[in-house]
Amino acid sequence: MIEVRDLRKEYGDFVAVEGSSFTVEGGEVFGIIGPNGAGKTTTLKTLAGLLEPTSGSAEVAGYDASDPRMRQQLGFLPEESPLYEEMTPISYLTFFADLYDVDREVAETRIHDTLDRLDLEYRERPLGDMSKGMKRKVAIARSLVNDPDVLVYDEPASGLDPLTTNYIIEFTRDLADEGKTVVFSAHNLYHVESICDRIAIMNEGKIVARGSVEELRAQYGRTTYHVYTSVPVEDSTPVEGSAGERHERTVESMDAVDATREAAEAAGGRMVDIRTEDPSLERVFLDLAEGESEAERAVARRAADGAASEDTETARATPPGADE
Image (cartoon, rainbow, N blue to C red; front, side):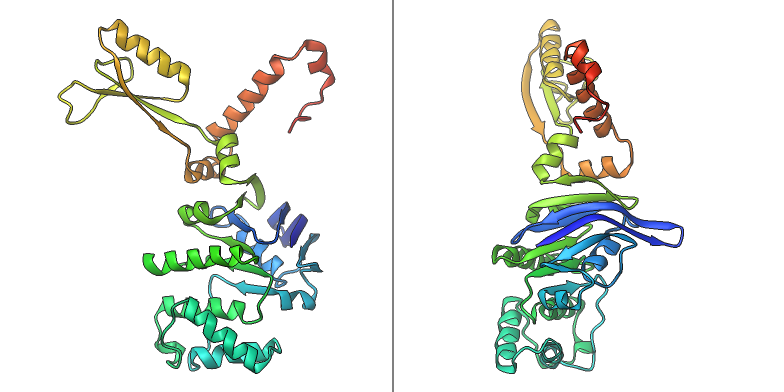
């Protein structure tokens, strides 16, 4: 439903997006995350047809993103979405349904059904008298008034209370389960991790990693092992409240776990527990956003170890980077 090829956007000498490429399938939730200024909003606005790329292309629902016909298939929710505050939710949404030439009877049913699903009770109250969470629900309903196939949401739950945030995030997942294609950005990585099928991590205008959460963890993450022993060993610390009978050492490989066990036994003690901590999306994100992270160096070391195990002639015949 979405295909982006070598997308580049320049503002004078500043490159906001450089060489981005990705695809999003129907019924998929695709998250774009990155630090402020990474190029996320520029990418989303380009998909929505609000910005012309300097080069490259963005295709949405079978149309070039700049094609006005594409907008009939699109629902766009910007991070800041001012509403006509003197209007009520019903009059506001009916106005936008008319802009999309939605039949009045169809529009009325669709508007009320959507507001029912969003649990918005006050439908005849002026928008200016509503809370931020209520206004955000109306803005989401506006993005659905034309029953689009593709949704582009920029920080859909920005600045909302936890209850409303969770409601909107779950609602976004429900839309994808119904077959809609969803692309969105969010700073809350827990929400990204919980509903996204795949994720692109951007930094300084470039996509530096992409894949499912599991794929990103496997490629860039570090599994941590918390090993507990009955006696102190090198680099261990006493566990608070254990009266010196339990010590913790944190390591990053099973070899180090075995070495810890052997050290404890050599000191007349034993290994009493081990707990595994899988890498979080937040840790992967922070490592990649910091540039050449320890995670990236670990990937490079694994690649180097694999290359070293090949016979010399094959290694000489393989161009650098051929396996990337």
